[in-house]
Amino acid sequence: MMLRAVIMFVLATLSLGLVVLVSPAEPAWACSCALGPGEQDERADLIVVGAVTEVTGQAVRLAVESVEKGSAGQEATLRLRVSRNEESCGYDFHAGTRYRVNSVGGTTGLCIGIRPLPGTPSAPAAVSMPATAAPAPAQLPGWWLTAGAMLAVIVAGLVAVALRLRRNNST
Image (tube, rainbow, N blue to C red; front, side):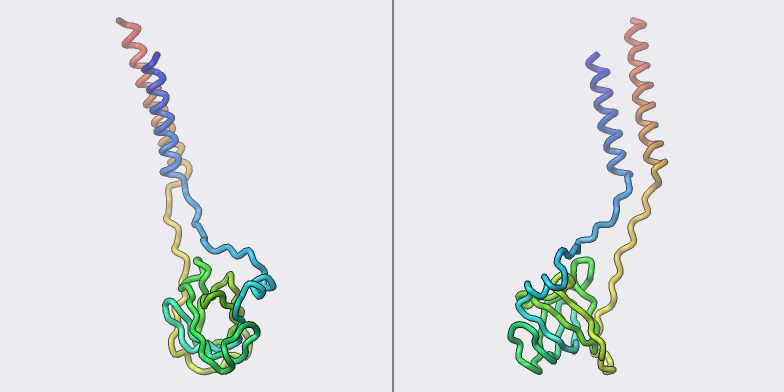
């Protein structure tokens, strides 16, 4: 009787392991902004309007046209830290484009507040950050493969239990 319980426990564990291993996972998106535009403006310690003059992997440089909140100085150049991709709440800035940019502690991003503005100068982009696309999810087997694997494990376990019982009854 104890052997039957052990076999059933092992089968249940294997079945659960197969479900976890083979079941498809949805892609995870880290960026989820909870603040609206008004709340973003309240939270920001600096809000500027300016044209992007340079974009690097970790920062953006703006030629400030006007300051709406905080102090950056008119006609100053401002450097802000920013993530490379939008999946981690960064922003795909383009050199030569005008933006209204919120900043908190020298950092900006989607959830902090960025808005492209009309009237972009036609100057060529000095440095442009490449657009980043989300990685394609891995192609995983269909649900039928999971069900088939679970069924095979259960049948194998039942056969093992039946053979064991038959052997015990014959002695």
